[in-house]
Length: 302
Ligand SMILES: [Fe+2]
Image (cartoon, rainbow, N blue to C red; front, side, top):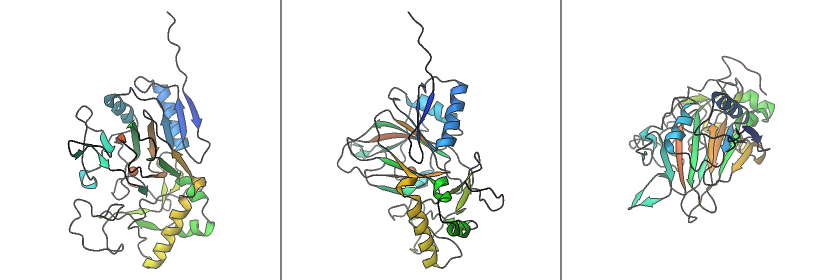
């Protein structure tokens, strides 16, 4: 019998503003050289897709994810329904499925607006990975925005204006406006008074040293020091620009797709898929650093 020919890893960019497919790799058994190529491809393309991971079990998924850095699930106070897998306890479940009257995962079947994961904490997630176990026939697509490009293509006057500004990523309310567990006693609806960390709007990626727009969530966003109306107008301008189609790419899920994205230079959103059937994603996230601004340590745009 012929020896199985060794697959050759290839990086195939989507041709859109971000994203690339990795083909020719078995994530259950890959070498250091192959991982180095995957890591570099992520820095270059911001989002990676590896199709055909149907047989990758959750232990092997965890092992792959841990090559990128320490795995750190979202803190329970941020989560509507903490659900972990018993055989791979760092994996969490994103799903609309209900079994025995109980949801098996988080986030239901509604739209999830543009955001970056855990931006409303001091140490937002660096990477997020989703492995598609069940996918509905329609809906539930995930779109990504290239936040390097969003910054680089802003009008120069806006870039200058935001270079030293910061954004409060309010922590008390979720994207739908409901209060998060742990913040039930917060009374205010005024974004200027809501609690949450303040991060630079122009963020430097720790590995590439490139500057990116860093926005978090639109709901409750506020630029400290600005009158409310001016803050609202500026954050609206930034969000509208970042979400332009030329800055984005949309993933249409197939079972077995594994997507890795870098929250430090992208944001993402999910379409609703109400009434479309079962969707079940297994998720891992890696520990991030405190976002670093471009002002104290200037870098060139572009
Ligand atoms: Fe997310």
